Figure: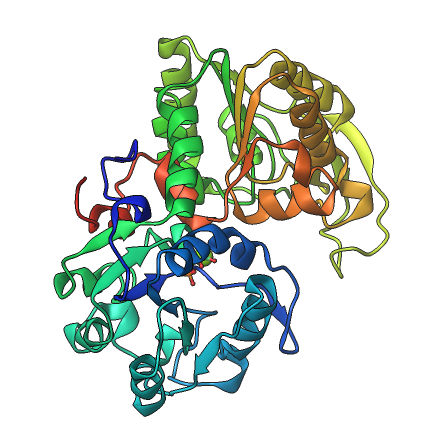
Length: 403
Ligand code: 3PG
Ligand code: MG
């Protein structure tokens, strides 16, 4: 049994059986070329285990957000090629616009134990994101058992991530799902203290429930990035033309009060890197200066944390035993505005702590800045890890049978 209380691939008997596996192969692509294959690599342990145990491995995933059915640019064909290279064995790509079509049926019928088939993008079927039974039944008709290993999509209640379990009863979670929940779950629910969470990113509105939930768990909460300016405004500071959500000022006040009541140290920027406007293009050279966070000039926009804040945040990280980070500290895509995000990444790399990166932009930042291999865990989920940090139950996990 896993710490999740769910049946796992270890306990699933698959020899000679058709196993439908939901992966998150939603990888970044440019002109049909995969630019980062982390999510494919992360799915390999489960796929290899099922091959080794003699299953007939039928993989499925979505890619991107096709709105009107099949579109060539959202085809999973490049993933089949890359996966085959990584596995060192053929991966038959069943290229059906209706996902479960003649090609898929014929490919599955021809499978021997240990063979691998990849279905076309599940979002080519309009029922997928609406979780409509017709598609769930079609998927279920291909297989005897089902494994969900798509942590990055576990916050979606779609046909391929949840609905299909109405029609296939023998179900399990994969190794990636287990690993993600082990790191994120232990960090949040059973942390070695001091426990620090760092939240950044553009919008407060995206993190409302995360802030609220984490204030019940952490010793220190660090807030940087675009969302910090709404907090600074709530403190009554002038923030110039910085990003602000006027509708969330009271919320920020409530959270500052909650932190105080709970004895949580809430750290906000004390100095700020400002410029005349947002860089356009994002990596364009830009004239920036550093000012105190309570005196941002009326015509200036805050775009990164200043040097004093970098030190303040880094010291908090270095004094922690568990650190969870979600959201960059500034416009890290711009060399002039990357220092804040870089400082936090470096402090995490240097800390004698369990360090967990909650996917999405912060994962991209950590890898782009070269600290990828120095973190304890980098989540493959963006939205999914955020919803997990909010304390929500993820439908893609909830639907799996208990151990
Ligand atoms: C992601 O990349 O966030 C996951 O694959 C889920 O994709 P979605 O946000 O399009 O549902
Ligand atoms: Mg998303």
